[in-house]
Amino acid sequence: MESLKTPSTGWKSWTAKKKALVLTSILVFIVAVAVALGVGLGLGLNNDNDNDEDNNDNNTGGNNTTNNTNVWQPAVGTSWQIVLRYPLNDTSVDVDVYDIDLFDNEKEMMDELHADGRRVICYFSAGTYEDWRDDASKFPSSDIGDNLDEWEGESWVNISSSKIRDIMLDRLDIAVEKGCDGVDPDNVDGYDNTNGLDLSEDDTVDYMNFLAEEAHSRNLSIGLKNAGAVIDRVIGKMQWSVNEQCAQYDECDTYAAFVRRGKPVFHIEYPKGDDTNNQVSVTGAKKTNACDFDDSDEFSTLIKNMDLDNWLQEC
Ligand SMILES: *[C@@H]1O[C@H](CO)[C@@H](O)[C@H](O)[C@H]1NC(C)=O
Ligand SMILES: *[C@@H]1O[C@H](CO)[C@@H](O)[C@H](O)[C@H]1NC(C)=O
Ligand SMILES: *[C@@H]1O[C@H](CO)[C@@H](O)[C@H](O)[C@H]1NC(C)=O
Ligand SMILES: *[C@@H]1O[C@H](CO)[C@@H](O)[C@H](O)[C@H]1NC(C)=O
Ligand SMILES: *[C@@H]1O[C@H](CO)[C@@H](O)[C@H](O)[C@H]1NC(C)=O
Ligand SMILES: *[C@@H]1O[C@H](CO)[C@@H](O)[C@H](O)[C@H]1NC(C)=O
Ligand SMILES: *[C@@H]1O[C@H](CO)[C@@H](O)[C@H](O)[C@H]1NC(C)=O
Image (tube, rainbow, N blue to C red; front, side, top):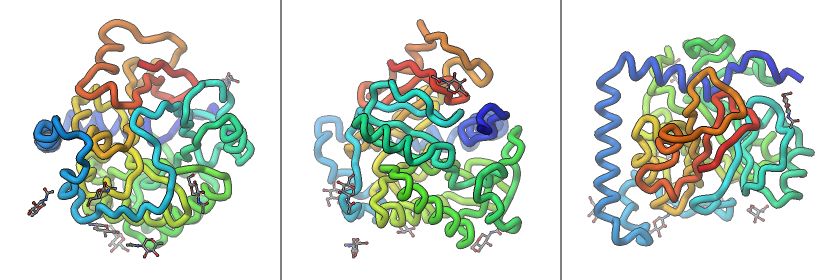
């Protein structure tokens, strides 16, 4: 079991990158606020009319396909657990959905969760090369960009490359073989980070639409991880959002676009910070800040340790 080596995983890199972003880029912050305000305004206009999803059609950029076949669509507010630190070894948390690592867990685990009446979302990094993965040797060096800050062995990849896309199709096939109900492709927001490959928002839109079509054709559901700036252009094909730290960064109104479309936001906050991973519950202002924000009763919020071990606290 390779479990207890230094985690070099996406959720950590996101946080490290995000810190760098906040420090170095006032401009991106202003854009994010503008996006948040724009969505906020839109929601305000629709406040009396939450059931009329058609009002949002123009937000899809032409990608409001209703051709998501009959893939699994979880409801707003679906309960969940996420464990990426090691292979799942505690299935006792009584929630509807488990988000677990595609590679670290075997089909027997998916079967056990299904027998318990749960759905399984399988996590993999779609936007980075991770040198410890089984298929790492398939990544051409010409498609590998900058390392993720502070995380040895993980680098951005060219998500427009057909070779990278082929690797991801193989991963979708593994998800089917293992019985996953859906996939959680991480690190699709290279555009928001120093990536060495000139990755853009357009690249992410094209990539997410590609991944969604391929997932759906395999009867797998799919969600958008973070990447708030492209929500409007991909939401039609997504079944959910997985978001980290929207409360901490005052971005939850951006992600509320999903609940307005009848799709859950699987939301994680890390109020203990980067380096504290323990079994202690969060109380007081730290809990309030994680759990109470506009529309928070519609979010599927979890308080987790940054290393995404078994520990969780619900709001
Ligand atoms: C969508 O946009 C078009 C053109 O901008 C506009 O005519 C139409 O009324 C809009 N539809 C909705 C539902 O907002
Ligand atoms: C719609 O999806 C297609 C892929 O299916 C993608 O190429 C295109 O860029 C998307 N359109 C917009 C406006 O985002
Ligand atoms: C819906 O998806 C199916 C299967 O991929 C395809 O055959 C069909 O043409 C699609 N329909 C539309 C309207 O896109
Ligand atoms: C696709 O997934 C849905 C939801 O899990 C399920 O009801 C349906 O039977 C699946 N379809 C096929 C062809 O396996
Ligand atoms: C799960 O595995 C981790 C890592 O090996 C271990 O620290 C933890 O105690 C295990 N938890 C359970 C409930 O077995
Ligand atoms: C990424 O891949 C695309 C498609 O192959 C290619 O056009 C582009 O030049 C590549 N970008 C880099 C930085 O190599
Ligand atoms: C797409 O638009 C139709 C109305 O044109 C709406 O009923 C439907 O809910 C929308 N689908 C998605 C997936 O947003």
